Amino acid sequence: MGKTEFDLCVIGGGAGGLVVAAGGATLGAKVALVEKHRLGGDCLYYGCVPSKSLLHAAKVAHTVRTARRGAVECSAPTVHLDAVMQQVQRVIQAIEPNDSPERFRALGVEVIFGAGAFTDARTFHVNGRDLTAKNFVLATGSRPSIPNIPGLDTVPYLTNETLFALRTPVPSLIVLGAGPIGVEMAQAFARLGSKVTLVQRGNQILPQEDADLAAVVAERLAEEGVSLKLGCTPVRIGGESGDIRLQIKTEDNLEQTVHATHLLVATGRRANLEQLGLEQAGVETLQGRLLTDKRLRTTTNKRIYACGDVTGRYQFTHMAEHYAGVVLRNALFHLPAKVEERVIPWCTFTDPELARVGLSETGAKQCGIAHQVYTFPFHDIDRAHAEDETRGCAKIITAPNGRLLGAALVGAHAGELIHEYALALSKNMKAADLSKVIHVYPTLAQINRRVADQRMKQGFTPSIRKWIKRLFRLRG
Image 1 (cartoon, helix red, strand yellow):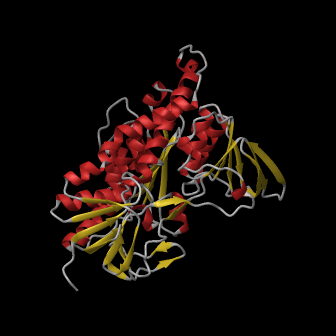
Image 2: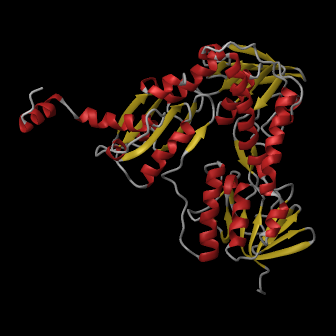
């Protein structure tokens, strides 16, 4: 085979692909970046950025509406969805230059716009051109997975890819799916004035989390007017624009009909693998999933890597960035770098937030892992009282010797507070190590020390106390 043109050819300009392309070029590699639409991907245009902007606007409206809790009198807020969505777009536009083609070309990346496909194991054809490379990186992302519900294809529905294009009021909204996207958008639209119904097949929202923590978020959603239809199976959908009718069946086999003006489908994601010529490249898939090893190489073509949502693994932007580092170390330097699978933090940005890292209590039980659980409520944190944010708790999972196995928080700023646990887990620390750390008073972060203290207090039994008194001649 003749000399290849590029060191790396990255296919897909989302978060993972952009980090690989920029990192590779900075390290001295000759890089091609192929994108069929625009750089930035789902995170910038349809995911993290617009959803968090919408949640912020919704929280402002909620704060004004509930200002009396802070002894402040305010008139009820007036929400214009068109203005809110324009603000969302302004946030996107402010971040967009970071992902511009000009920026990447200035780094030395050859940016190519167009849809292409592999013609063999080392050639990607796009715009009439054959790109050859030592290694390729699939970073084509994911898209909404649409369920097979009778009638769904006959009615207009929203996904995260179309939601932020709304410019007219949403009087009522049905949300199918109670994963992170579903619950975040359910709360956002409820706070912006929509009547929201959240439909979930399972018996709890956020099914990847411990039930007791997810229940805290569910309680808040219900308080804010979201109608929770849990354990309900969608049977049929009908109607027309502005009048959507969803027929559901409960666990008791009772059928109900839910009406709304709009429908949001948030029932999961699927990898973008179609029309890439993967068969010609010798890349095998299984039920719409790429088969990759821990070094993110496709198992049947070690020169083709996968990065980001397309891997089908943890579909978070921060994990896409982590995957990019793994790919670069392997593809450029031939180091046996592997994906981190033990210490992966994430957060659902509802109010209250729910964040977790490491092993959950449910996971420990399912795997038969010996463990102990300690919790501490935000209600006993002074800063939480000062800011009227007393809902929720911190939970840590430890091995019998006190070594941290996992942690979770449900409460204000949980997504910020979780990182102390992520660091502790990465360093194989014990709960006692967190107990020794001085935390600023008054801060919400004190909960991280207080929950760790619970292990020490639990070990301080009456018999131990009696022994200490006798040994040190204490008189209390």
